[in-house]
Length: 333
Image 1: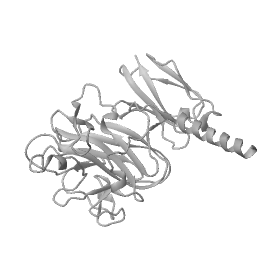
Image 2: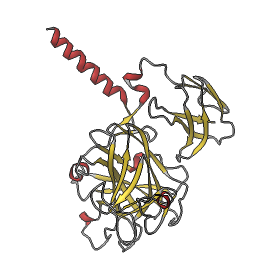
Image 3: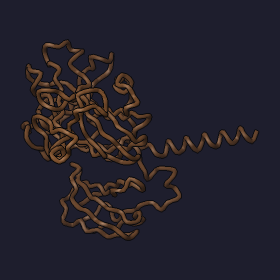
Image 4: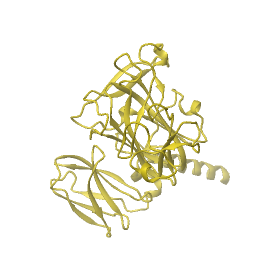
């Protein structure tokens, strides 16, 4: 009987922990990798207010009765530089290793397989590169500019690359292919000789990010998937896979015995007081575009930060440490 109650208690604790860590995905919390797979619907990110990012929907030709919700850029095309209206998807990696990224998209305008077919892509990870073969250790390998210029083991991509971003494109013809073949998990880089496999290596469990910026107009992006090298494409790209859940570290059962990070006042029109900060935290305040607007090197558990010089709006404060990581919203009025 005692064993029965013990098993019940352990099951209850595990259930509470799983429930407590899962929160509503609002674009700010990290999407959580599980069993080597991370699936994110592109419209789940925070689209920069006032930008030319738009959302759309249509029937899914590959999944009976389903609807595709997608994002696309409806502004001027930006082939040689970033637009400054990036979308940041925060992610939480539990199983470190090397992952392949691919997004599902289609060309939404024109009659060419080489136009309206790409976006800028960057993964904030310990390594970010591409290969022409379906192997994370294959050579040759490409790395975005400017890092490729100083890495003797990596080539620079042909065509555009800037500020650590790859030009990531697909080439499924928008007219000549049957409707059911126009959407696909295709994410290439390198002009002329497509490097079809884009990889990110995460050395330790923790919080990272995927950043997408506009390049072509009317490139429809449905979802993106990260899959660990131990997981097959057929398993990871299954359209019946649900979107990954979001993780709120402040709700974690493991944090219940710790002092909760507190921000006051919030909303604020000037200074904020932050209490219970982890030791020696490197604090970062970023805007909704993911751009850092302020950095603070903290050595105390309580810190007062003046943000009176920031414009009114929503900001996020986080720390750079992967242990004791936090991510909180601030409203400046």
